[in-house]
Image (cartoon, rainbow, N blue to C red):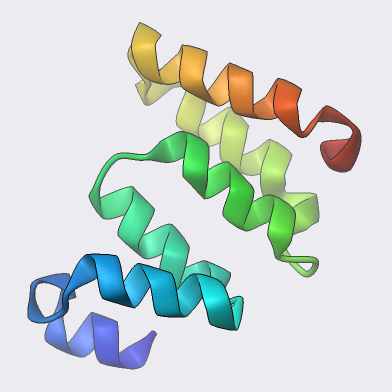
Length: 88
């Protein structure tokens, strides 16, 4: 995380970095990349997969929801429904 914050995401091949981060279960790195590319529904997966942060998913949704357009809200809703039992 420190390297990404110091160098910025533009210093990296995002596809490769994302692939490596997912393999290593570095969910916060994935979250930063998804936030940069406005893939908010995939950020939910980061919260779901990160056991330590899973309980923060409702706070994330509550803070995110007002800023989303209709298309992004639908994607987030679908992701919530796909992982409903895990979230609850």
